[in-house]
Amino acid sequence: MTHKDLLAVVSQFESPIYVYDAAKIESQYKRLRDAFKKVKQVKINYAVKALSNLSVIKLLNSLGSGMDTVSIQEVKLALEAGVAPGDIIYTPNGVSLAEIEKAAELGVQINIDNLSILEQFGTKHPKTPVCIRINPHVMAGGNTNISVGHIDSKFGISIHQMPHIERIVENTKMTINGIHMHTGSDILDIEVFLYASEILFESATHFSDLEFIDFGSGFKVPYKEGDIETNVEELGKKLSKRFNEFCVSYGKEITLAFEPGKFLVSEAGKFLVQVNVVKQTTSTVFAQVDSGFNHLIRPMLYGSQHEIENISNPNGRERFYSVVGYICETDTFANNRRIAEIREGDILSFSNAGAYCATMASNYNSRYRPAEVLFYNGKPHLIRQRETFEDILRNQVIFDVNA
Ligand SMILES: *Cc1c(COP(=O)(O)O)cnc(C)c1O
Image 1: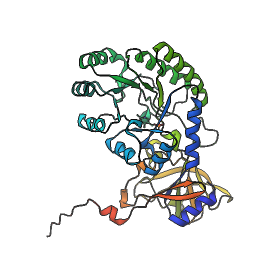
Image 2: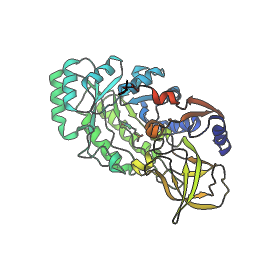
Image 3: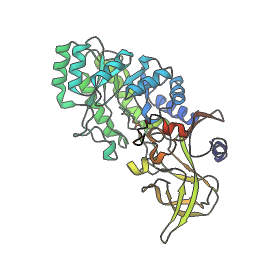
Image 4: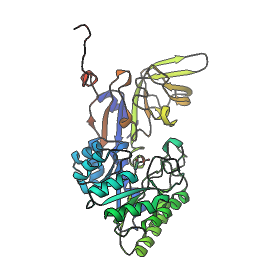
């Protein structure tokens, strides 16, 4: 998508707005699939929570992707998008037995991540095969909020509880058809990932009915030029070889699964905003835009550094700016950023806005959540309307003390 394409999207659909490049989603999907082409059965399940627009789910499904879901609502969204139940894996954390039973009724693959539910579910539904989420206790994340494999993590069943898992499986006669790990975002060191995989291979030998091993996600994507990213090609080479060896020793061809979110959609997305005010203070120049952490919370929540370009004055002289939002609370997108000279009315483009941006948006300050556009074959297609005041009023029930 060129600057011209993006500016045309703002002219047509106004700002703020998220724009997703279908070609980039497609090329990322193919890149990951190709990295594991030496493995006979590979399944990529897109983590719907990264970007849960129906049109994006449909696009990925048409490429052959399954879906990884973390709530019954995401399961329903995937089904609504036309994804076959067998292509959906449900990997919740801390949800009720009742919700897991509902998902099982819908025919999706259940992934259980605690002993209590495993025992209850296995007792009531011994005929429904389940996958179990293992916590290999490998610290692979870049930020403690997104490292989910370490010792005090709330995710997964500890690898040290394998005897207890086996006892439940024996007593309930349930079938374990998959094992899974998701150690956290931002895998920078492939050796650490392979080390965690060895733990998963070892735990796999405790079960005789496996159909797949799911290695989760955690692929780091670049946020700017020169950024370190997960080398998926190298990971593909090493893990494929090891996986094929495992299948031989296991005595059966099983499926290698992944469930990337960010890797597939992060770089495909741009978030476009308009500059309302340029405010010079004694120490800095603020560019205040028609958005805030209600639409892009990642900088405030995780300290994410999204690249910002001034696409309506790309050749302007570069200056330092603090780019901030319009929310009545500290609302900083970036400090001390070198950006081509910003004038009021300019359009700024945030990169890496495909994953965890629209799905984390809120109505804080009673603002509307933005529209979404899918750029496909050179043309923009509206895939979500901007909210209206009706949406702000929806579900409010008036209790009038004076009535
Ligand atoms: C969030 C999540 C993912 C996707 O993580 P990314 O970092 O976006 O690739 C995969 N699996 C599970 C279980 C998740 O909760």
